[in-house]
Amino acid sequence: MAHVNHNIDPDDRTMLTARVLPVIKYAQIVAVAGFVLSLAVGAMTDGGFTRFYHAYLVSFAFFLSIALGSLFFVMIHHLTRAGWSVAVRRVAEVCAATMPMMAVCFAPIAVAVLVNEAELYPWAKPVGHDAHHVADHGAAKPGAVEPGATTGGATAVETPSLEASHAAGEPHNGGVSPSIVDPHTEDLLAAKKRAYLNPAFFLSRFAIYFAAWTGLALWLWRQSTQQDKTGDAAHSHRMHSASAGGMWLFAVTITFGAFDLLMSLSPGWYSTIFGVYFFTGAVVAAFAAIILICAGLQRLGFLTRTITAEHYHDLGKYLLGFVFFWGYIAFSQYMLIWYANLPETTFWFAQRGASTHPAHFSGWSIVSIALVLGHFLIPFLGLMSRHVKRKTTSLVFWAAWVLVFHWIDLWWIVLPELGPAVRFGVPEVATFLAVAGVFAATALRIAKLNKLVPVSDPRLPESIAFENI
Image 1 (cartoon, rainbow, N blue to C red):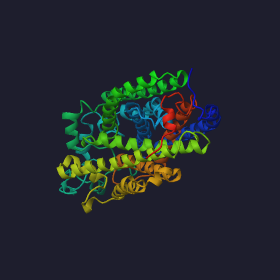
Image 2: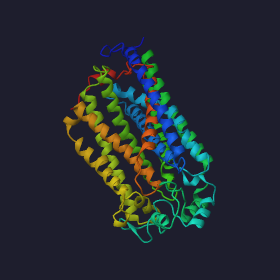
Image 3: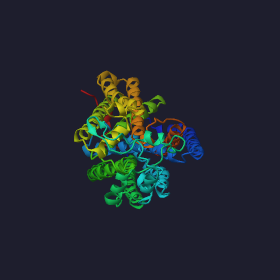
Image 4: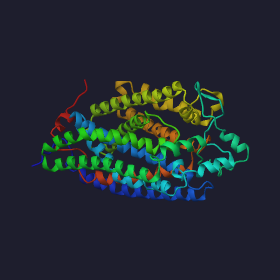
């Protein structure tokens, strides 16, 4: 017979079902409204769906990162046989279990690749198309910089500037720069990267990624929920063993997934550390989301006798640690590219205003500075205090702060591909609401199926009694 800990509200599932059903309906309405609005705006924009696809990619990557970071948390919990985190593990399991719906949400990106119009990925067009466009019009890839200019001491790609093309009368699709591949990138794609960057192989890889992520997330969630019913400790041993191999699979798939989803937006650019960069942001986002969800549930009356200041303290430690790790990786990526002085890599940062050359200063430069301060320095200092991490109100503030800047980070990665102008408006808001509604509705539907805490986990009493030194 399953062991039930009496420190947990026995009717939390019944209460949760009653509370979340209206919220699920509202989330679904928000999702539908967001999709309809974003598609309508895309249809009415002169540049077609280019802006919609880029805005959608930001929101998709944001919620996918939360699911992936949550999956990492669940596996590292089992791999280390941690005791303190049992009380908050179910929240992470639910976030990770949204992965099948995130695979469905990948559909617009798959469409963008299959239509062969390169409205999102320049490599999605047939070989030679963009080269002819460049030869006819003399335009450069959005964000190209002046010949001989430098990016923090490095010589940038010597292609005509986007501003020069506009001054010469080039059309720009109502303010949205066309998806043009410069001759250097076209040659690179044709000679070396086309075998990897092509629609069929791209979609095949993501089928593998989502199969791996979904398989791991759902299997761990099902083992955990089955243990609620059986009380068998063997489930814990199986989850521990599976997480060992799962962590290797996760490391490979999230790295290549980051390369494919985000880095290939600029197929001429490369960074061997980009996968780690995306991973650290995903873990930061996951811990921030778990903190916010736990605090929200407690505010509604759930988990009040299960999650304590001790759990928030440790969640805050993880949040602080990965905020610092993100800053370290971000600096390492920038510094290595700046020091290597390779034109085919420095242009990417110049395109985003992250350059020490005055000619490259743009609105994106302000965003770059804001990321250094808001994604690293300010939250790092704000989370240092023990008292901040043990006080729910202050920890919730910093969790929300970090989530906002994680979105800004993804926005800074994606939107500069449209050109030098900083763009934020209805497409970004509408696509965020669309994916947020889907994510929230899916998570709530999963959450109401089982208890909010793994009540039969043999380490649960240790988790409830846990105290920081």
